[in-house]
Length: 220
Image (cartoon, rainbow, N blue to C red; front, side):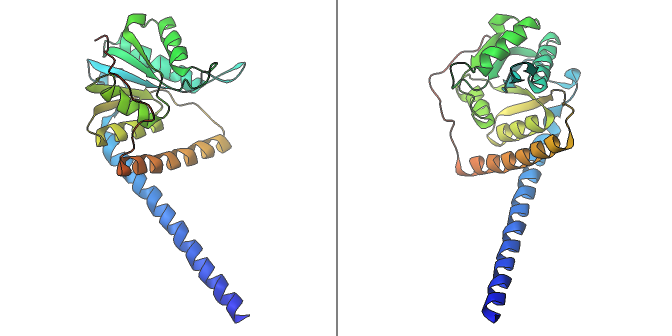
């Protein structure tokens, strides 16, 4: 009986230590993200720099066959707004293209053209499989020196933190948030916390994008 109680006590201590360690890691990732990005994220077009390369981070165009993804719509509207405000020299649309019938950069390009952005000023990055990859490739493959990253606020902050830690002169422009119910909000909140921890891990170990390749010139 004593051995069982001792074992349970040890397990409880180890479990508590693990939970505490995880919380500290999450808090450290949050602190790092906020410290690196808070001063560089904008919500109004007039606050943004002029002449930057826009980097639009990809997501699915639709949530289902007949249901539009408002995250996608918001990012496209925000990018078009910056373009029409004369803030951007060109736009990189970066996303996933691993499947035949799923092409985020193509969908983003088509949407931006419909919103009035000239086709000649839009460049597709088909290897933006993750936010980290999109940010690194914008500089190293496309040669962008000053970048305005466009996505929803929580996502923009992580992307800007990544870029600035890597020495990339990046700012962020917040696309509109989408109203969600409580379970969806909680799922997104937990997912973003995990993504920020993963970002710190990538930066710590010097992760490289999954695909690199030859230099691609931008239509500046």
